[in-house]
Image (cartoon, rainbow, N blue to C red):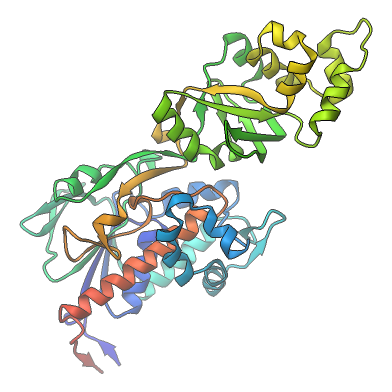
Length: 419
């Protein structure tokens, strides 16, 4: 038995990233007729680009540690993750015919490390389920209750009366892939409380000297630890750029660094260049007699400090402190580095800010009944490592289920069943 297309409840999804596609899947499986609109020529553009370095889909660490990655929004995000936890997400991927494995760091990847096969299988299943895709449709707001789009053929209007609408338009990073934040004034005009979009998982400017930047831009810093002044050290790696620093270790600390800069105009981070050496050993090696050798040669010989690490000492320490063995040893374990500003949001891997949880009734906009939001449109953030994608998938499912429930409450559950 199958449902007549004319009598099935109608759902409209705007945005073809992971959250929007997952909402479309839930809605279609729940019996809705689903039309999905996206501004780009094809869906999943950011998803595919993120997978170029290896598609990190989720993480296998324990639940409490996993939820701790969402910081101040952990309590709000937890229902999404609990309803679609990493283990269930992996089973869902396996159902698409894609195997996964857990890496040594606990990160979960497709076996072939690629995003494209997963996306192709998913889109095939969605089309088989009846989801209709409308590409090159850029949403521009509402007019008299209808949804407005810009298309290559001009303005288009889509009737939305009685339909559930899921917005999954992303944040404001990587605008060339469709996430440009253009939805913010559209929702604000309808009375939706939206926190300003700011860069997350981003690099920061340190205003290097030309001497340092010309010699060390692009140099990796491996086996180091970093802390925001006053906070705990975290071990990892990052890269020196022409203007500052970026990389996984920096991204993990980007929320407090960004917020400190917003509060105080700059942020001081402390860099441990020798995280595997205790402070006493470092002091002992610095104080060891060096004869006629320069201090730079001495540090290279005794502690392996050379290249970009040596350059950072000269860049961030005054001559007097560099010449003082006690202060130098202290700097090797906690070198102060002043960060001036986050890199522009369009360079960031993701963005923070968006629709505040207080503006939502579950996943539905309080100010616009029948309209639901998912993914990076909502005011949460997470580091790289699979946490972003896990929450996007989970929020898409939550929005899809909430939209189905709304359709049922508004009479759409009374549908004809035809042979």
